[in-house]
Length: 595
Image (cartoon, rainbow, N blue to C red; front, side):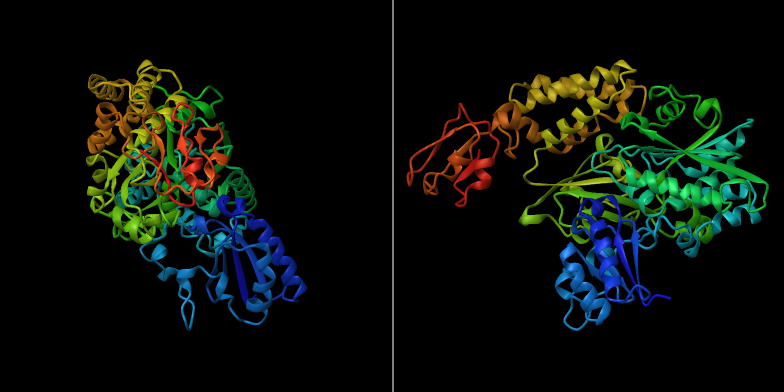
């Protein structure tokens, strides 16, 4: 028995902040202090507060240390682990109180969260199957194989109201029931762990922090529909997730939890990994299956749907990582427990990757129906630098922008669609008053153009023409007629594209037109970018009453566009200026502005 456990985040975010060096330093210092038999260091998954890494929590006190450096480790070991004195200067500031340390669950970031899919992330060692089993791991699989029929499993998932967490929100139980009803000599269960949306890292964090939950859920799905083989399609750019999945699959096989005759039930099920090459279109179910088959990842016309003819033309169930992460808990705690969270048509919780202009960047899981205001202002800590909230982008390139007027709309599948956005996989990017909404739409269109597989003309050509129109607007070269044509093109692409990538590609444009049309008109009519972002429509100007003639801006300018003598107000040569903004960042007197 250890008297103390030191949990260190080993997710991608903290690993990039050198958390492995923290772990190595801890083990060295703990051994040197003679505490190796009393203190255990555990590498876990993501805690959620990604901006504060490397993160460390010491139990049983629950002391939350953030932004830890290797040089801090000797002090933590000497003071806290050896002498029992918490090092308050290294604690997450919100947990520090005069007489004691506030629980992490009482902080603004965690107080309104309810972790179901993320329940084991940051709690267990993801590379140790025994730790997963210790927190009820594989108990749900044992229950379905020994106590439930396949139809009872499907009925429980149907009753729970669980909807797919990867995009459109199709009811999971219905998808499983369709596949179960189709007879075949072979069926498949697939997991979409491709996650290509810019700013999204929900599925990656689950795989890194709790890989066994996906394996267990896929085995349950296999039993429910009569499948004996599963595939996890994960992007190769997720090396930590891939490694932990490989370790988890190996351990599950060794424990008899994958393979032949699982739990002595006569049920056979095994899993394999397939690595994606980073094609966004392979997040679409038929394109993903085509890629697993070893062919170029392109979508197929539907019908037939995958439940009838999916992978290798056999009945197939495909869900994403977060959807599967909910399954074992639904089986163990029941459909009524899951339905007690969320809204009437959107049950349970949703994981969001919170990024952009927000104080607490990271991973959050909240009950469906939580408002955007609660996520941004309370959990997220608000907008930095006193700036105003302008919009939030949900659903990535397939979603839309939610303006401030809808801050109090409860977030669920139907409400987001009603206001011109969508849930998507769960990326949530916050934007402040300095964001140009035309530029945001252009950014997502550029991404979509690059990621289009090119199979259908409306997407291949239409998104390219749409991007060119947006570029024309940001250059101040467009007319009001161009704006009308652009809107018409959006609806054409939505109606005629083959798959979800093309059908949702115009959403960022349509939502910004709906809520921020005045910005489009400013670019077209006034030839100005209100946010001062679009370079072709802005000028960098030096305010003569504030300029001290220090010459720092002139020395910073990469193209020599700033002219002037020492102690004399400088001027910007607009013909040379490339609007890079370097001079604005360097000026100590606030004398340089964008107009």
